[in-house]
Image (cartoon, rainbow, N blue to C red; front, side, top):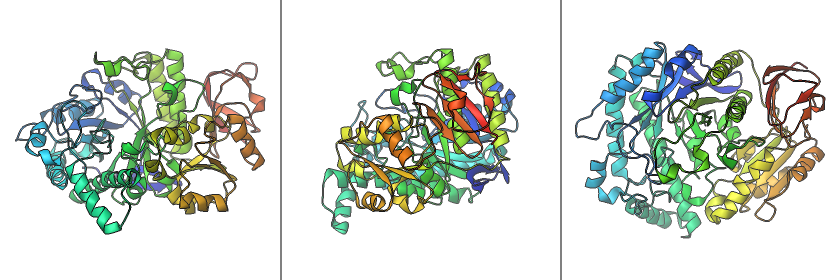
Amino acid sequence: MKKSSVEIYNGNPTLFVDGRPCANCAYVTYMPRKANYEEFAKRGYTLYSVPLFFSSQTINEFGAVPSLGKGIFDGKTPDFSEVDERVNQIVSARADARIFPRVNISPPRWWEDENPDELCDKTLSGNKRVCFSSDKWLSYAKDCLKIFVEYMSRAPYRDNICGYQIACGNTEEWFGFDMDSSKGLRASEKYNEYLKASGRHDCEGTLYSFLSEMTAKAICELARFVKKITCNQLAVGAFYGYSFESCDRNSGHHALKRVLEEDAIDFLCSPVSYMLNREVGFDHPYMLPLASLKAHGKLYFSENDTRTHLTRPPFDIPHFNKPVWFGRDKKVAIENIKQHFARAFINNHAFWWFDMWGGWYNDGEYLDLMERIHSLMESSLVSKSKSVSEIAVVIDEKSTCYVDGEIAFNVCYHTRKNLGLIGAPYDAYLSSDADKISDNYKAVIVLAPVMTDELKAIIKSKNCFVITSENCKTEVDVLRRFCKNAGVHLYCESDSVVYANDNYLFIHTTCDTPLSSLKIKKLELILGDEIENGMLKKHNGYLFKIVE
């Protein structure tokens, strides 16, 4: 089995395998029969994730998605036949593949039937599912993980395994199966104990904050266990901490601070935001406060489930009759691919192309672009680049537990649309990392659905623009004017998406834009359409190397 870790390399958290840094871009699909492993292997990709399941139950109680694979523990005797089949399919395409399984540890139906007191109170599909506060479930999950990891460490492909992503809950993203923070008998018992021990006042905000802590506790405990049984030889991570995206209080994603402080967690993941169904002309922002992850030495993987003209819903069920599940035309898809890549490339983090239902990228133009992207990611390993953001955006993850969901979304979710069009990059932090917000930031934008003590302290010490429920529809030009008056360098003063570090600049235009209007002396185009007559075309993305 390979040794892997996340190390600070050229100033950024980077995945290392056997002592060498990786080009942190990967490929994954739920549908092995429609997988594009061979083509991605030909295009240079060596890093892969593979979904594996402890149970064949649905991964999405809300959408009633049919089973996506055979469960290892569906019967009383473990069955690894599909594990072998899925992993060997990747190894056959690329013998030197580095694979980090996305292992869904949700328990099988028989275990939940035998343990009704360990389940959520509510059901979305008719079947009650496990509650994250259950110690009995945690113990069972550890037993299964031990069997699973020991099997993987003995398998013929053991030297291809380079880490584990621990998945659970609704859509594998550590949302409660009840989509209400995983409430159940065990959660109620622990909450009552917490109230007695802490003397805290019982209210919905306190409850939802506590339930998020229970979710984070489970993730951290399982990560520590995997680290122990792998002798600290492999990187471990999970989906969690969608502070900007799933900001309603019942998401269970309001304890990122606890996860960031856990040494056993090496990386965290989230999809690219689904805001506006990823229309062109807008930023597709992070769900996570990336600067906080970096400050704690955690690698971030963005899940680029970028839709294309080949994207089709796989199941004829109502859940998939929504715009977000349908692909764009090829031109729009290419622009989205460029934008999702450029965000990772410039902000120095990892990503995977999530060919969710298979065949999404099975087109020569897409694959050629994927090859160019992999080459750029490899080249970035040898260059040191750092953030040049002069704007810090701050969110208090606990504050959204104490307000109505609509207020939380207006302040924390929707504000990102206008923030992404200022014409300058920004770094996003948790308020608990206020001490890591350096004086190099000339402007601080505080998202405050509730004014907490931590936010008050930041506002007193920084040049701040505070967004509350009363001004959450602040226009782009007002935000831009604030930043400009604070001395922030604006790369573009039209409503365009800009990512930048000290070596590269990416711009996604919202209108035809003269190249000469960019506030950089000399640029070299390295990805994007040829520039004609000195004009950047509307709704096109351009990645430049900064020459001077």
